[in-house]
Length: 222
Length: 251
Image 1 (tube, rainbow over the protein chains, first blue to last red):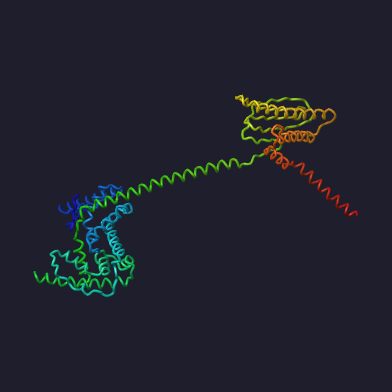
Image 2: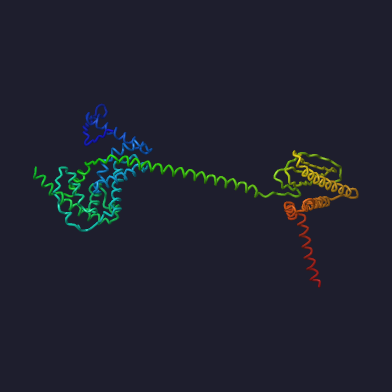
């Protein structure tokens, strides 16, 4: 299956009025991109319909399309990659068994992602990893470990996020990355809205302290 | 760094990332899906069996209920017509017309038999100086040789009824020679004849046991008093009360 990531579609639209007809001029490149997007969307719809009928090949195709992204989502919350993969598989299991409840109007990727996030939160809760402390118990976590000088900025960022306490990390990820509101986060994590807000504030501050020196070093190096 | 800017930067960096799962991940998921689908198929299979079993019970209950409602329907017995058999076969209907003066008599006697064969006798005496005697005889000859005794019993019962009917007609004729016979007298004669036949039936000579069905019919007939009788009884009771009151006051 061909995966096309359309970062930007260049539209050059110039409306002109000639003989009471409106002409729209679209550049050839953007038109090709648009056709590809439509094709991808149609293929995805077809795949989902087949997967709903328990077509294993269609399910595999959907899995192969979304698994790398979803494993990344799970990894944001779960430090151990093996556990993250287990959670992702559990999430896909839910996706395929509840696929009939998915309405074609919504964004499929968003729907799958929400399932993955909930699975990750459930995993953390079941392993009692989420603790919402008001103060950082271990000052060592705040110390920036610059020994790992990864060229990959994302890996470095992930490492710094992993150093945060689970409570901080969960609230920060849900708010900053997933875009949930404090009320929704409070409901998901069974905490108060106030706790959610304070955890976010502390997580952000801690993460800034960890990330900023690295950034400055990187800038200075250039 | 502004808060939103910081959040966005982290979000954008993380969103770009993709991590390829291990090669065996799909096989694992596929195996899990197969197990789940098998389980759900088995569940539906059991559901199907349970549903068909319940349906069978429901159908049986409905059928049983319908049959019982049929059985529960009361058998209406009108006047002297007694008909308690489920099926009634009328094979023959002959009319014998005889001359008589101002007599009307219409009585039907139906006799219950224990075998499917039936015997129905109608005795009719109609007005305008003619007596109609309707005799409906149903006789179904038994095909097997083992039914000889039952056949004899039927013939015996038939003869008995025939004799009794003839006796009633003779009595009516005798009475009509000297004077005019009233309807009440004829009714009384017929009722007596019926009572005698039924009593004989209840205390069956051969088997020396009581027929519950016949007893029930008898009681029902006793309960089913005619309107005239009830009026007579009421007048009689009233007269008795008035008489006793007058006697009491006279003292």
